[in-house]
Length: 221
Image (tube, rainbow, N blue to C red; front, top):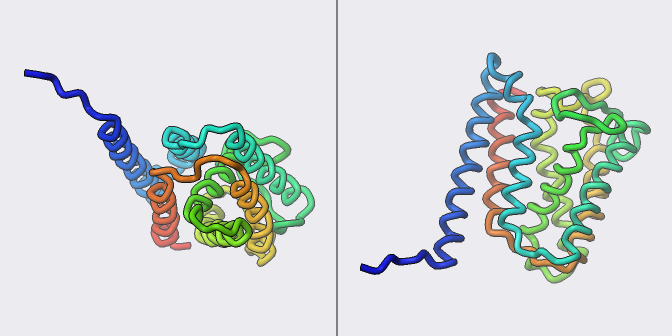
């Protein structure tokens, strides 16, 4: 009896199923842990690890390993991170806010993981509009999608001390700043010559949306 060797397509499919199970498990456990006051502090310390796990999953399934990809990734990290430095120290772009201790080690008062977050969000939302031919239109839609996601994240982030706004009010300038900075990053994403299709992107983005949407209710924010 011959042993049947799994095909490359079957192997990719199995890996994709495992990744989806891991994503669901991580986000479901996160929702439960952050919604129960007794366990909230413990799960808050795991927030950077959650973001890094999402990054690793994205990179595992990324197909476009050209020279342009690390250029885009670095641009997304440093433009996003740099804009946060400007925001923290000047009040421009987003408004007056400060970061709490939840997101881990900081550089110039901004958590390093924030740069990773800008990359993740731009990559996931950018992939949604990858088939649109006009780069500027696709970048605009990506920026709107990212800003809409930030709108869902903001109340949860404030409640969990990711960051805090002056007078406890999220200013409209925050969302205007997000559109502007996100548009620039998305335009670089569009102009960079690498494969934009990632089989896990849409699933991971949906998990992220559900994660913060549910926390808006369980945390009563």
